[in-house]
Image 1 (tube, rainbow, N blue to C red):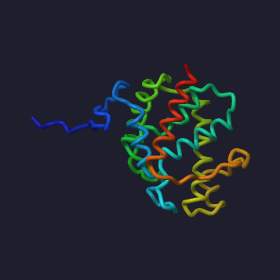
Image 2 (cartoon, rainbow, N blue to C red; image 1 turned 30 degrees about the vertical axis):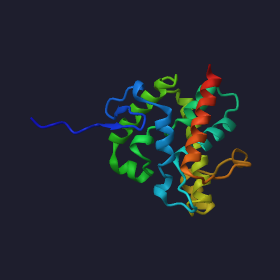
Image 3 (cartoon, helix red, strand yellow; image 1 turned 60 degrees about the vertical axis):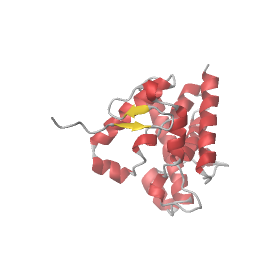
Amino acid sequence: MAQQPRAWQRMLSGRRLDLLDPTPVDIEIEDIAHGLAFVARWNGQTNGDYAYSVAEHSLLVETIFGRINPKAPTKWRLAALLHDAPEYVIGDMISPVKAAVGPGYGALDDRLTAAIHLRFGLPASIPVSVKKQIKKADKVSAWMEAVQIAGFSETEASKFFGTPDSTLMDGLSIMLRPPVETRNAFTDRHHALLKDMT
């Protein structure tokens, strides 16, 4: 009888996360923060001395989401912070690669997202209206990244991500810093949001 391929990954916390059947009990914020701080956005094709990490992107998206919906309950700000959390184990794929991989990637992402949400007191699936606001914040962040560090012109970035409302970006800029600093900032923000939820 053929042996099934291994579908779990051992985390630094010692947890074993089954990628095909993830459970909330095997998810730790320290593993997420560490993984995301070392996953580069844009396949690493950005200017600067450090890669722009998914953790840094997530912090920016949460900030922009707060500007889009300043009265949003803290739980939805937490959902915004965690919007790319599955990438701590499946990596960040640019949209053209996701399209080439097909629906299997989306299903894997959905299962991991549900387990992560449940682990931190969120519903497995968040309301469509909140998802749309997070997606809007995500696109504003992508536009900023494209223009500031990925070599896009504003016109080109607007073609792919839409033209953002400039007030949502006022005073914000892309930060590049060592992964350890980003990891700690992500963990700190997560803890602050969880504390505010209680």
